[in-house]
Amino acid sequence: MDFDVQIWQNRLSNLESFSVEAFLGISFSNHLLIISKVKSYDERIFYIKRSASEKYSLEQLKQSIAANDFEHQGNLSNNFSSTLSPAVKAFKAINTFKDEYLLDYINVEEIDIRDSADIDEKVVENAIVNNVKNFILTFGRDFAFIGNQYHLDAFGEDQYIDLLFFNRELNCLVAVELKKGKFKPSYLGQLQGYLSILDGFEKKPHENPAIGVILCRDMNKSFVDYVIQDYSKPMGVATYKTSKDMSEELKKALPDIEELKRLLDTEAE
Image (cartoon, rainbow, N blue to C red):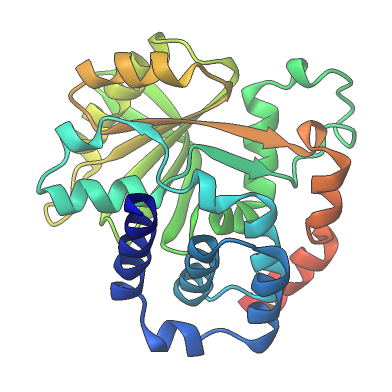
């Protein structure tokens, strides 16, 4: 009985933050897709709200479901609770990022790399830059791309951030560092240095402190959760998958990349 009560309490909590406008704000096709592909009540509410807030097309919703965003959203290993205040700002930041990103447009066969372990940061970075609209959709509509290999010059020392974004909801710069292998603690020290320079030399007076995200191929989540807490700058660590890593079942569930590009181009016009 207690278990049933808890389930209904969770559902009522979801309903309290669920608006009729969100339900009516998505297309009938999106509703049909959610009903046919998503079985649990909480997941359905999540994708309805997500479709409304992100203004998903049918193809974008398919990709979100295929990437299992319900499980990954808000699960980023981070230190936001101790580095961002007030608590509502930390909560927003946590829910902005995922613990895994599906970069399905990075096709290692097309770039003539036979072993996925050989993919270096530059290859992934170039693929992201060439598909920047796809990447922004992966991260969320509130992200705006500023540049890659963004040059920082502080005290005569040249530093380069792999990818720099601005997030309108969080009102801050977001530095993304790409790593080809498994997470190493040294990555956090490097990123903290970049964030210090961004806050000291790039941040506008009305903006919040910069946030950093490390995207790596693999990580021990328990280890990352432990070591990241001693850093003073807001940072998170996530993993990414490319088309090489995906199962055939997942590939079939995703929209055709050329169709997605066509929709994005139409949307931009």
